[in-house]
Image 1 (spheres, one colour):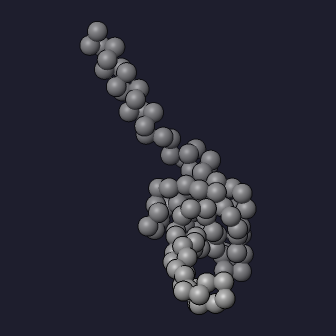
Image 2 (tube, helix red, strand yellow):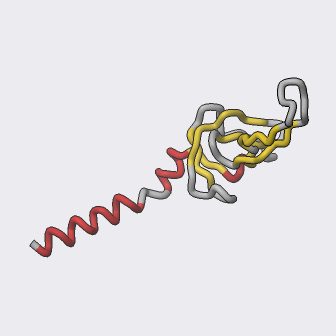
Length: 101
């Protein structure tokens, strides 16, 4: 149970919970063994890199972290269930402007 994957690499997903809730991005990779996904530009974490020949001072690199796939939904499915509220607000403003004229 729980191994059914509904997200694929390249899908655009909407984040349902966590620090990046409400944002969307493209899936870079899917880790099926841990049931997690990596989304481009979201859930950024800092990784400390040891000193080496290429980096004599070491480095703190920022990269995408993983998100459990139960916390994301394909954006097209989300938009189908939750119509964009901005369009409704714009229509209401247009209706008010027409009645005032």
